[in-house]
Length: 340
Image (cartoon, rainbow, N blue to C red; front, side, top):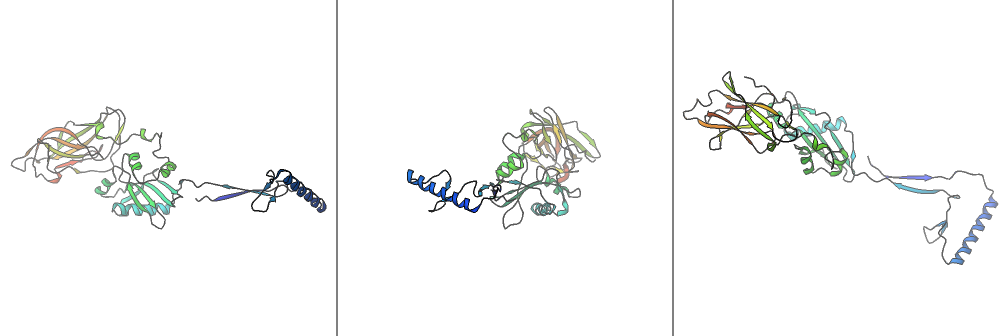
């Protein structure tokens, strides 16, 4: 919406008609009074006269209409409703940005669509959090995790919609570092000073977690290793999706390939209270240490919580072939039961 200038005109109420001779007489008296006043003071009167040029003109509120102009300032940013046509265009851009077929995009997550306009730059901004289609391949679904489906879009004058960046998590920290105008954040009421948004549970950082191996089991030629993540912090945090897992040898180096992700992406999100825990299951195929002459002594698992770049260690003694097949170690998302 554009705001321009709006003129407000005040019109005098119509009164009784005055005869022409009387108007002329009154005018003559007024002119004479002005001349006498100017001669007596040496300066023009400023109480009832407004001058717009070298010729002075007399204007009073009772003898002629007056006009005043009120200018409505342009807003720094405007919050808009998004149309289905615009949302469809943005969805097409998102699929191209992720290099995936449009059919792999289910649509936006409810209540995560933001749309706004900055008049000063004639630029439109949008933030939409997409989710994968149920039929999307596992690799596509993984790419949506950890904020991978939460993207900022921009429409600049003379250009088409384009994706600017993936927001990722933590949400506010990412937004404040991305090229998103502060006026848009303000009109969307996101990540503002004094906002209660940071009190909403965020994903668990590595510094707020510990991990141990729970009671192991063996079934159908597979060893089951429950990886139990415990919240060691003082606030609730969220665990969802796949942790990164690999074998760690006695020297501290990785043995064999990292865990393959298995199962479904539809695992629940756990809000873990301080002292609480959530479990992700790791599987080790039987015979992982029997297919080679000299298996490597593994002291445990090197574990990266979802969306974290620092790791934890979970002790568990076993023997693994250094050249074990890629599917020797498998990991399921939090709360998803392994298929044996």
